[in-house]
Amino acid sequence: MDIIGKIYASTGNMVQTDEGDVPEMALVPGWHVNYWEPVPAWADHKVDPSSPDRMYAGHETFYYRFADKAEFIEKAKEAGLWVEPEVGELNG
Image (cartoon, rainbow, N blue to C red):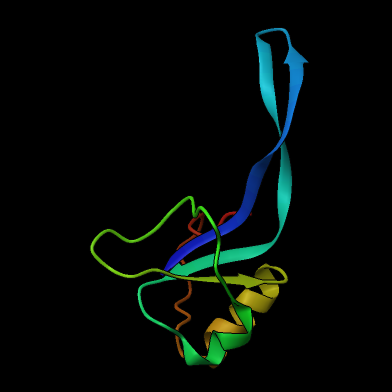
């Protein structure tokens, strides 16, 4: 399981900074998780990004978006996929 969490994407605008122009970034709604096989219990959360930022090498990748981290944890526990992380492993 690849727990991504929050994703930011370019708005297409540039922002002026002391170091020069940089792309303006905006939060993509949801809490994002990738998995190497379909999770039937998460069917309502499956998304198909047009240009994913991360994917599994050598495996098909299935993309899921939850409302927030709490919903993801709840659904992962229901699906039997939740393992309590070590301190610092689940950022965001």
